[in-house]
Amino acid sequence: MASILWALFAVALLPYLARIPVARAMNQLGGYDNHLPRVQQARLEGLGARANAAHYNSFEALQLFLAAVAGCVVSGNYDGTMQTLAWLYVGCRVLFILFYLLDYALLRSIVWGVGVISVFSMLVRAALSV
Image (cartoon, rainbow, N blue to C red):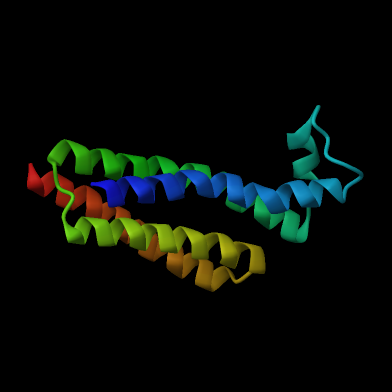
């Protein structure tokens, strides 16, 4: 189970790591506007806008993975396949962010799809284990 929890930690950390390029892009827009950061983020273009989208998408993705981990806990299924699926999801999320920043839209969509399949596989395996 520890492996799956470390995977959860990694996925929970990703939104904050994805935020780093957003903050750098905001600083290039005349400094970070801590009063209205979302207004400033809406003006970002190029890499800054893609980084911002990756940042928000990472929070959205975290919810689904958290549900899958909860399914593992409830079902008591922490086997090697479940651990592999969890770490495959982590890898897909890292690549997703990287491909978003590099503007590789097709590759981003492919790893997003693989990640979704892996997390739904975790949910189905958990449900079948009960």
